[in-house]
Image 1 (cartoon, rainbow, N blue to C red):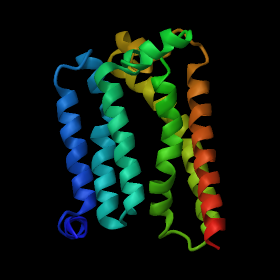
Image 2: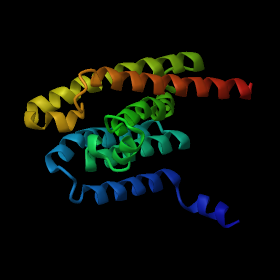
Image 3: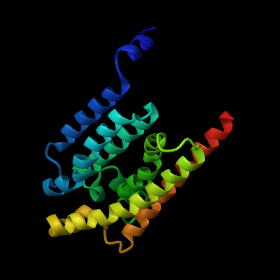
Image 4: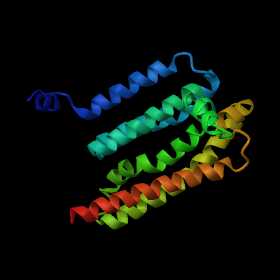
Length: 203
């Protein structure tokens, strides 16, 4: 009874936005490297207003909005500590004998996995074909993961070249960009597979 009343009185999407902004403000206080934090948050300064505008015009599903909020929240954590020095993942890497902190690789994977549904929501108004919508979603996310690596490199070179290693988070891996894109592609394909499986179960 109480739960139903709360769902009627508290809109979920504004609540998700409020929770994210609260987390973002908390993590904006004394980040590990302020200039790197500013570079990392270029994504937020551009992406968040864009997401809000798209929500007002087209509307995300509740699931899509929640997944989008989760992705932005993970990025806020990475921006605060830098992706290469995020706590827990550093300790985890040492514990299991890995040579690097893999938080950045996880977030690249989740870029494809978590953003599949929000992007598919937006494409709902472009085509009535579910299969075509899925394919377009996959292709856009594949392209976006590569474009992000280019934009990330250019942003570091143009603004603060001396922060390149901290911002790009390569951690000495010459194939870091390729592995990041691969992780994003795998996340996208896994989300596509799960969505396809769910759709077949509903039929």
